[in-house]
Image (cartoon, one colour):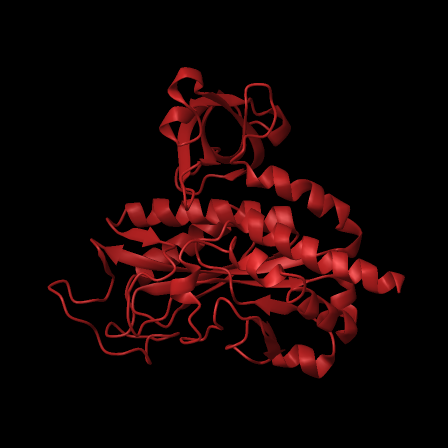
Length: 343
């Protein structure tokens, strides 16, 4: 039996990496462990020089291909050098040892991926000839043709994610016209990140069929319009059982230079989005609070009431690398929680 395996990887484009993919024909179906490594020209993906351009694709996650259907599969890969060491652009390889180190704390994540549909260079729903739509107010979770733009694509993308077996947990229209969100999780760090990258690939691929571009630009429309983020919800076993651990995690994200260390790696264009307006905290100030969407980190109201649960880091941009944000949060929060237990 012959199947099509779409090998997907993250390239070396700066400041924001892109997804790449190509198709390998296999005599399948095959389990992940049986999938062969493959190669590609790194000089065409900003990952190598032309005089030594061969790089390796190592399969790390596979799922059904909902677009091609049948037994065809999607294959997410890490990029390796030809000596089988991780390539410098391979952020998944940096997350792996951190996730393993703190596995006993059982950290899990839910990531809220905002994105914007573009038709040409303008957000879907903005007048094509110029000018602006009605101000923000009715678009968030709206209904009706005057409020909602791109729902057919969103529904198809949701169906594709479910058919692929991804851990997608919801969708909604966002505050700006043509802006939407889907959520992935709650899952462990590596798993939520793998699922998010595949969900992003499916988003781009689905929108492609409609002649529409999906962008993760953090501020796709300048002016009095919301930016696009990837709010990252996080908890450990201790946080799910008690409020002291919640406060420890929040405090740890604000100490010892951690705010700027995190923000600098939370996606391109962070200063344009984290202005203190449009439900954000200023990028260079750290704060946390219960039910506060103007804080850097929000403690949901039910968490404060129940004295256990999770926190939401509201700073990551829509274009953040999920392998990076999960690594930073696990390393910072779990280190602090580990120290707290030793006191």
